[in-house]
Length: 68
Image 1 (tube, rainbow, N blue to C red):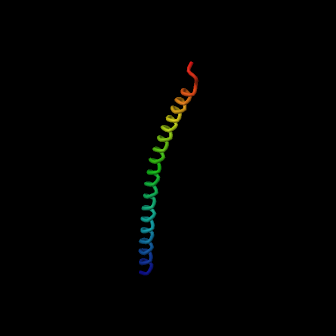
Image 2 (cartoon, rainbow, N blue to C red):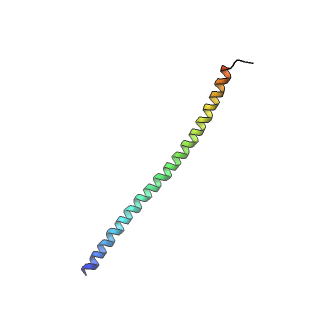
Image 3 (spheres, rainbow, N blue to C red):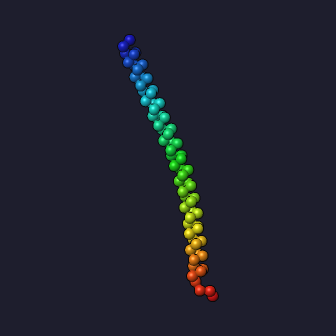
């Protein structure tokens, strides 16, 4: 009888630990998804800024170069 009680307690503790691990894994996966979304937004913003910089450079070169 004593062995059965130890097994039951051990099973409960293992179940609790697995539940805690699953909870933190779920949070970790959510964080990675959010990070992926933010990284995508950053890439898009970077591309836009590069395009704007190229446009501004072109406009500056036109204003600096003497008219032909």
